[in-house]
Image 1 (tube, rainbow, N blue to C red):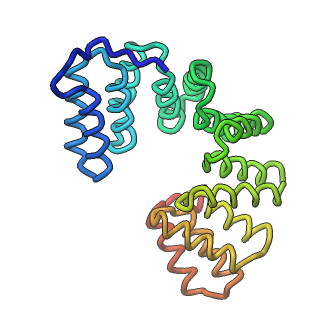
Image 2: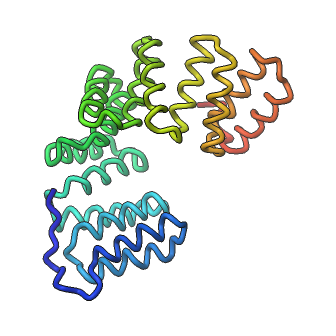
Length: 261
């Protein structure tokens, strides 16, 4: 894809070097150092779309600075109107944080038009079509497309499995998709949680469900929904009332509104 770099003119340290430094600092948890590196990349090359996009992604994912991230994605697109990744990132933010479904879909559709081989964009669009628009057929088509583009994209299998489980009542197909997601990415907590709920509610497999809930919580100790369903499993199928109470209290502590969701 196009990444305009008109301001990069033989710097001793290139803007891309500062972007790489920002990425490394972010990975080790040095958020102040990461932001300083991204800021330096932008100041060195104020017309370089990639620098704004990386800084925007960092602000979104690490700092929770939604308005700052939007401003950076806008700046990236302003400097390179053909920059598909910036549209995809802005679309994801509009969907997840702003609830701007029309804006999110417009960005994702344009990202796909500019780069039709990015599996993650189809998956995000599928989530919107399923979760927000109730369009099961088109959501399934997007998940299928994502998997055809990248057969090793775990998130697409997990999303397709959830749709098959909840909307299509294809329990065998859902289980196959969850298994494949976990085979590809053994750290995908959502896939363990989803497979656990299928084993728990559809198959009555208490032992298998418990193992999946345990693994989901091991990966993400703040996953309130996993504590809640594990509490119900322990109470209803495992006769572990103390464990159920502890898990329930933990779920409420993490998300006081979870019982109403």
